[in-house]
Image (cartoon, rainbow, N blue to C red; front, side, top):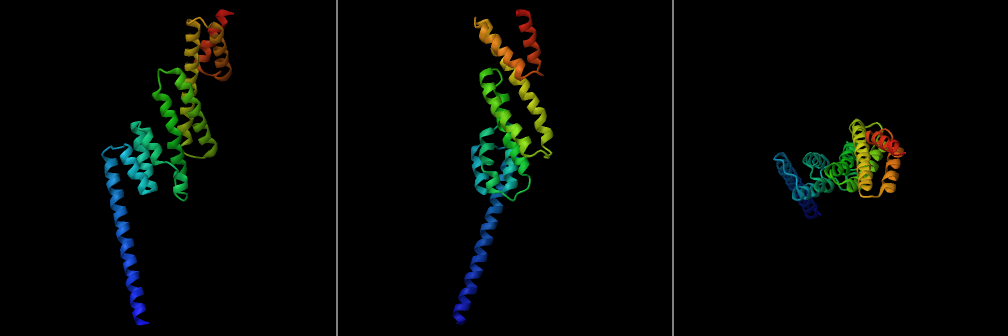
Length: 203
């Protein structure tokens, strides 16, 4: 009986030691990842390291750096399934905000490609407006609203540019239809004013 008790104590101590070692290794790995982020490193290798460590605060730090640098694929990896992996973590709205900014950033990066901007713009609008519905009281709402306005202005301008391209290439009916669509769905945009002026001059 005494032998069994001693064995149990020894196993218990071994288990505690093993747990302590693992915790120390996790702490060291987080510190290493944080140091790499401090050096401005945000690539897929760092993102994979951060994601595997599964530390909520580290995820957010990495995602913010990636967004600042415009490295969107690493950002998406870092925050993949964030809410499921960290259901009790604070700042869920901040994680959702960073995720919602991804399609908006892609929209801005697509400057010069009006068709692609419209495609990305629809995705970004869904993400940004979805954030506002889901977190109406979030402090980050004030960051989202002006970006929605920028997004709609940009999409309206792309619609206008494509309409003018149609007109210039002999497809005036399609161009005019696009301009009418623009004035209907982006009525407060600067491009809508230009569209109304153009349509008024052709009537």
